[in-house]
Length: 191
Image 1 (cartoon, helix red, strand yellow):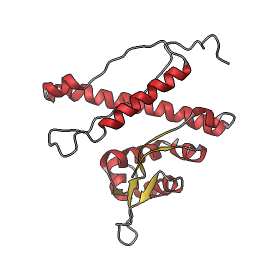
Image 2: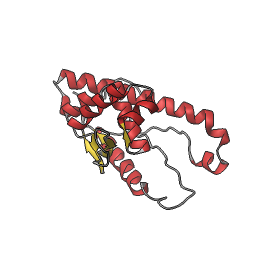
Image 3: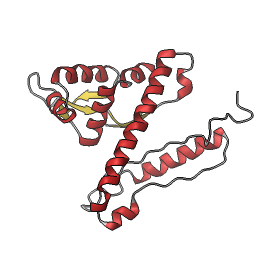
Image 4: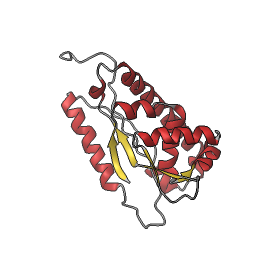
């Protein structure tokens, strides 16, 4: 499995769909599965699930593991994650609309995950409750400095990616990286 893939316009358009994005997330979080298993987990039908898995496969986001038998295909995510560069899509209205939808969808999914954690956290060991959670901060930077900050955070996450491998006390932890302006006013020199 590849670490992170860079989405092109075709992959972005395919992924900007509610069921497809959920299918990819499910495969990344819970591993390989058949269309029937995914349909059960996501409360949808097998036919639609199979159709959308093939769409994701066509742009390289999922792959058939080759371990199924007969018509029973076992699917897995092709990568741990994905990223994109918004400037790659300037002037492509469909891609920009897909990018807008996908960003909002991910923010909504992140909020839903946070809500589930806040509802469950009291049952977790205090050590984990102290280690996890939410914080916010702000910085005053140029666009180049913001890009460097994002890369540095990504590098730290990469360094810790398998730090708990083999430790029974380790758990998977989601890390969301989002840099947003403090307000919507454009910087003075922006064009």
